[in-house]
Image (cartoon, rainbow, N blue to C red; front, top):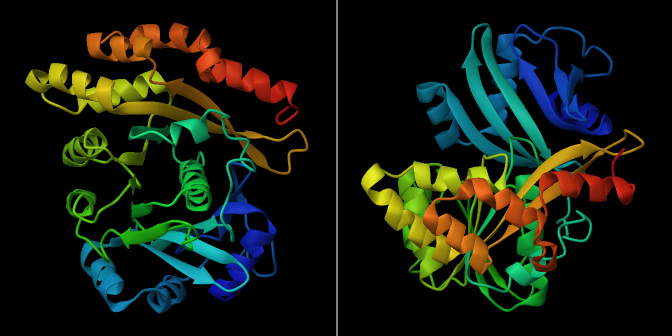
Length: 334
């Protein structure tokens, strides 16, 4: 089968990811479960040479050079009528391999995602607004919905820094500048430093990966910008701890003070099956930087955050347990 046929079959199975590995038959992740790709001849193992030709046809010269020299590369591509795909190509024991994540056509909205009602209010502030969760929990989709909300309701300059660009935004009321790490800049840190000189109102950082990027994001949030970013943590309290723990011991007290001042909120999410088992829906834990939360961050008392969340419904806060219970009551999950 051609790559387009494989991708078409994967989309027809409502798969989030297509897994292709030399020496193995194609597989897909659908509803969070890895299963064989259904279709004619898809049970046959893929030959290394055939898969390598597929990948070479997708990559530009710079991406192909990076793949051949470094044995791994991230890139994105679009297929008419199927949408965009984010791909990681790599070398493995039996040859080359790739995982291609489907990015649906169209831009998501906060309402369609059943996002927390407090989010539009948080997006009116300046500071650091974090979206967290494990890999594959829908963080990129939530960030895209935030950008779309700002794009249709405000008049600002939004700069997005992504690796690679996933959702493609069309400027509406906002001017949206999308930059891809590796193609348009060397790193998140380089791009974030440059973004501060590009007259932005909002900066989206695809992922806070290292100390320098986190430091620059805090600086941008302190200097009057709204900074949207994602982080691989499983709860709001763990997010605060992670942000502080990347710094050296002698800096931690200062960083806690910076974070307590800069933080707007944390949205931590997970995906759960719908009652009909034909899809998944995001469930959101929310933390809002109220004076009480800022005090706990400053004092390093992150263990007490959950109890403050549970009693902070008036501010739009809820724990994951409360979010799951609410989603069940609404019939969104089983």
